[in-house]
Amino acid sequence: MSGPMTIAEKILAEHAGCEFVEPGQLVEVKVDIALGNDITAPIAIEIFKKAGVKKVFDRTKIALVADHFTPNKDIKSAEQVRMLREFSEDQALVHFYEGGEVGVEHCLLPEKGIVLPGDVVIGADSHTCTYGALGAFATGVGSTDLAAAMITGRTWFKVPESMKIVYKGELQPWVCGKDLILYTIGNIGVDGALYMAMEFTGPVIERLSMAERMTMSNMAIEAGGKAGLINPDDITRDYVDKRANRPYKFYTSDQDARYAKVIEYDCSTIEPQIAFPHLPENTVSISEVGTVELNQVVIGSCTNGRIEDLEVAARILEGKKVAKGLRLIVLPATPSIWSEALDRGFLKIFADAGAVIGPPTCGPCLGGHMGILAKGERALSTTNRNFVGRMGHPESEVYLASPAIAAASAVLGRIGSPLEL
Picture 1 (cartoon, one colour):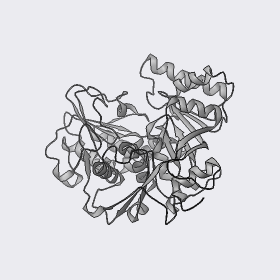
Picture 2 (tube, helix red, strand yellow):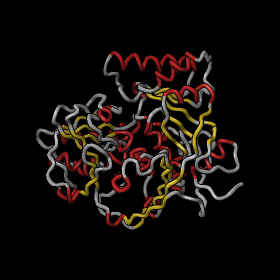
Picture 3 (cartoon, one colour):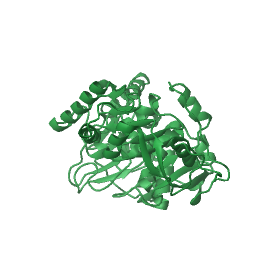
Picture 4 (cartoon, one colour):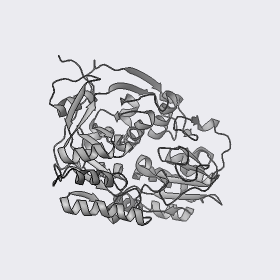
């Protein structure tokens, strides 16, 4: 049997050595890149060693990125990074990053051309779905699955159903990919795409930069998605060709591919979005926010720590000061983003405004370090999750928004729009 397939189905079919796959089918597939970080990889390494295996399947196809608690925040995190370092040395892994080389994994891997269009990528981190923006099938797995992949170079999936989301119309001022994905999650809910491949399409997506596409794919998991894919095009090729050091392949969905669900949005009606505590689906348009005073604003993370995000924030913050009593924390996502932000004068703008500028790290996003909230404190963040206690004390609050809203809010001292400045 054969027939039309979606991009997700085509990539899985090819990697499983099948002509055709359909939703619900169990497939065993070859893995192009297997990823772990300083929280998840130590467990995988222990399982790997217990299995008695001497060598990883391919030392060029495993990436270990010590991004969550670096620079080491305490003894335990230092021990975890040491495990990654020793394992990487022992296995002669090509892609191990720590210290001055480390960046937030989901910004670092595309930037270095490690993940490419058409790949199957698994990562022991839920936001591995970011690479769907390149036209890869990328998804988060547990540390046990990572260990198995490091040994065999393979993993298994149930082929997911696909949901097609079509974005039409013209974007309002200051609306970006972050707003589109927050609006989508607000509309369908945190389990609205449970175990589905979300496919972001339409004229609006075709005009988005690679950075904004990655922001959208990054948060597919926040709607329960298995993956968040965008059909690759010339924008993808421009991004990838500068970086790829191995062949890659563009897969695109057939015109008559089958979808479990198709949704259309008129983007001209979408304002900048804020996700209120304690779920990414609790979205509110900026005009309906009211007065929400803030103690902290965070700009960074695998969702919005790219140079385009810092550029937007710098444009708004230039010549202005952070509100008294508010902490603004800016974390460029990779060393090269940090360096470009320095060259372009963004870091000086942030420093002059009164921001704290940190190293490339996940930091406060997961309540790790470099910006933990005290009881009763409120933060607005460009990160991807605002669960209870996500950034610190269980009685603190996290609001999610775009870099534009974050920068404006840092000046206003409350949630607000650049239009107010």
